[in-house]
Image 1: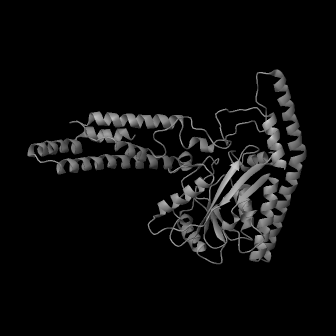
Image 2: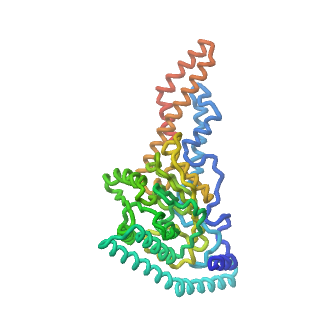
Image 3: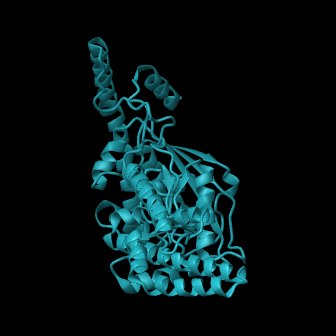
Length: 447
């Protein structure tokens, strides 16, 4: 009822701030791309429309190919797949928080300023104190549980009780409203639970839907953090099964996969909760899943998360976690749609990459958002990843050019019945393979 009331007030009072957005939480395409996702796959598909070599020096075809490369690059500059993943989630209307948008009507501006003042009073004088009380309660509860667990230990049932209670107190304090679907597919056995990722609070969102039943729940994994998140990780290790990774430690990275897979096959462990995207995004797309844990004989439980950002954005885009937490404490609400999907297992015909992509597509399809095949947000975060992707694209494209030439050569020789025609092709073969002109074309066209 509270959510419905605030949404009605927002629809009634709030002016439209972005006409280009058709659906809240989803970007509208700026342009219609001919070449989407990975450049090499797009170019490879387009090259099938014409012969690679159409004249003696191949210049005409390479000019046509160059045009396609330029067009792909311009499309990526106008609207790439990655940059907007780290922006605030798009909304069509003003969310009754912050300063109201300016209009041409002075009377309307005064009215909107009055609405913003009322919103400020309600959120800071009424909602914020209640949420701080709930947040403090969750902190006290988890700290006492961690202390008791350190000295006396907790049973699995007691650990589940603590995790569920803390998660429900915490999500209530953050204003999370979870709408859960298909609970019959909720993870209930050993295996790996995978989900798309908005924030570190995704863990509490999923745990808060667990009943006080020791057969369900999640074993936690992830990168070791500092600050308040690191404190929560240390406390949760006292009453839950946890596997933390220090990425800067090479030996830990090597052993992490083995430990996770061992736990995923262990009947004594709850389902291992992982976010294979590796980084948070604003829920406008599902980024590429890392393949390392999508192996044989391990149950995969996909969970699709979709937020409704109209009353509050769940995505963590701030520089520090405290700023993010304060924004959530003073928001109207943060609405989550959680879809439990049927468990999956790797097919005999699939490799790890194909299996990971199939799970990624299932999650993206369940919440009707885009599925990105490339290394995604890692390209934005790490220079090393960008250089690696650039070199991989160059290598793949160069190999593709040579492969197409060989196919051309074979097809022409099979259809040839005249020695003269065959000889002319043989004389053309050497310049292509040895002439620096062609090597430069391959190198510079993928730069």
